[in-house]
Amino acid sequence: MLVAADRVRAQIAAILDAWGMSPDLAATTVEAMTETDLLGVDSHGISMLMTYEKRVQEGKVKLTVPPRVEKRTACTALVDGGDGLGHPVSAFAMNLAVDMAKEVGVGVVCVRNSHHFGAAGVYARIAARRGAIGMVTSATRGVAMVPTRGAMPVLGTNPLAFAAPAKRNRDFVLDMATTTTAAGKVKVYDLNNKQLPSGWVLEADGTPVADPKRGMQVVFDEPAGGLSPLGGSPEMASHKGYGLAMMVHILGGTLVGASFSPIRNRTQKPEDPDRLGHFFMAIDPAAFREPGEFEDDLDAVIDVMHATPASDAARPVLVAGDPEDAERVRRLEHGIPVPEALDKHIRAICERSGAPYLLS
Image (cartoon, rainbow, N blue to C red; front, side):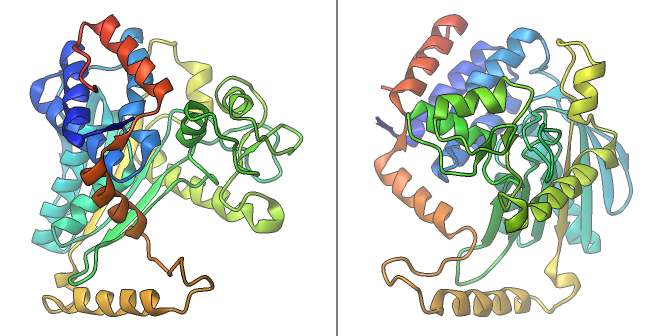
């Protein structure tokens, strides 16, 4: 079914309230999750409530602790997420990075003691909306990526997002996993009972997995096999995706002393927080160019890309961010798709939490 964005927003808010989340922290989380669904990133929006419920029941997530700045210089800060959901601390951190960039040209804010923060691109977009270039990376809880030449997963999907403000065009927004696909997209294909594209999920011997239920088992339940690095295979340069995943973890995890999943899973108790880390950087173009020059030049670059002759006239050349922005327009008009299987999960979460069911 298609559900109006306001109903999705209200449903997420009702569940977070039933769980006891502080209203100010919940408001930020609701907006981030709803925006994620509007942009078409179905793996990281309302469907994440299934995972968050489990974390709340396990006692891993604290829902009332606000972000706290631990260290700060003119252009850097370290923020403690208080073991809460990652959305409030991430919005806080990126806004703080932009504030510093507006003062001194660049701002870098690192976060520790956090949990899953949804879609990285939501926070990169904050920077672009405020006239800054933004970059986001994050450590991850899951162990899903099988490194090039490997048979077992040792890295997560390790997201990377980058956004830059344009003037006439939509902002450039790259939001990507460093795996061929995000683990959550395997979940989305399972919820919709769709076959997986070849190469997304690999058995331990490298055989591609097509069945979505088998894909869920390999990615979420079994010790061997998992998601391929970006590129898919050594012949298609999967070492580049593997290398990017390492870079993402170094910035979003190692730099802030956050946990590394294979080590955490051996050393921490099941009820311990995930202790994830995130990295946020903002650059003010005005530190290098006269006001408006950067945006004008970026518009010219994007214009050239859009004018590139297409191999299929029905499928014009796009730039990063175009599909999500177009999907946002469609979903604001027609609604956010909620598959029957996901709707059943949301109804069950409402029953368990005492929250009203509001999607229909």
